[in-house]
Image (cartoon, rainbow, N blue to C red; front, top):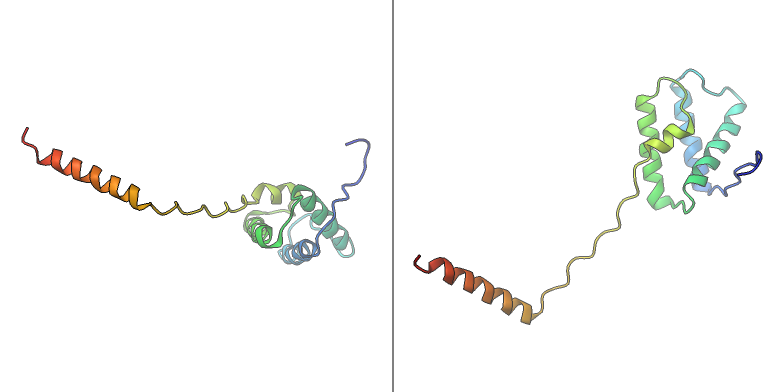
Length: 128
């Protein structure tokens, strides 16, 4: 990045709302270093931009629960007003997409498995 250009990531409305709601909770904790009064709106916007820049395909269904979990972690752990980096560090990974179940066995494969099991059983019964 050249000079001091702003990160102008588009911030989805749900993300801005989530950050605003969670920041209001953080303010209630009365942490040292918290923004006061009118600065709060600016702080919320800046945090939302930083988060949006790190989550380029931000998705409410996938990412809102992760952001809530990260804010929960900050509320529990922080003794001072947190930096965006602390939130991003606390952000859990996106859930893995559900794996497809294995395809059902064909009748042919079932017969092979039955034969293998029969062979094993026969070998086990063989006198040594």
